[in-house]
Length: 312
Image (cartoon, rainbow, N blue to C red; front, side, top):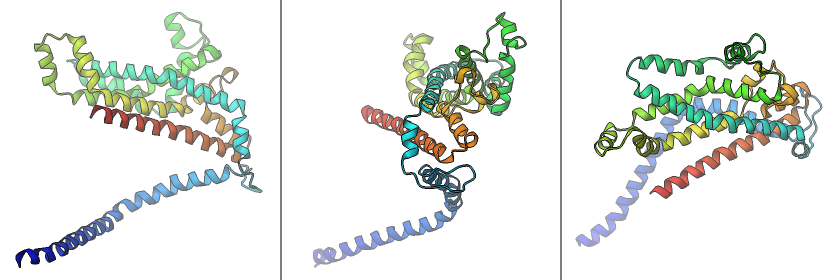
């Protein structure tokens, strides 16, 4: 009889527990939904709606006035794919990214190591390394535009040079790269510094007891422990560098640079939308750029997932 009763009661208990769990989840969503509703509303208003609106405009020949737009289908995308100026601008953004990302990753790591191991004036070093990142892009651009100006610039005067940094296509992008390193390295420096402080000291103590020198401790302990943060720094810097615009425009007096050598993809898109008044075509370029950025981000996530699975 006991076995028979348990056979009857067990399914009832299971259904009751499942119903209770479902009720708790619904109640939790109902209460938590009020907290996330403001964020979702703002996200939909300022992210989702502009994205959908941009996709719609990319299928039209809309101009900046918004009048008389007609549906043109994929014509804007076909034109963009055959637009050599667009590919040149994308190449400039990619070239800038290839220069900045490795340099800023290595420099941020070295500065973090210095600030982490130095004994006196730690707060001052950290402030000096991070402070430039707090400056607006226009301020940073104007500072380095003056430093690089030929004839009166402090950079040439200090090193005894006469290099036309801002007027020669061979040097213009390099000047922007140097400015970007000085301006943005503080963010990656802070990430590395926080990660260094999270490495247990006993790992270094054990390595010292085994006779490992400073270089060996760095190679076999510090770098492996910073593997994930290095991946994060690289991913963030790639995404930020591909969106080159502010400092380049300011340093080149809101122009495309000597012989269009510093015109980035973002700048060319804005020129099409607000100078040539071709909002539909500019929207198509924006969608293409969004796809490129999303592909890079998703590729980074897939690579990270594969690495995590391989280490398990």
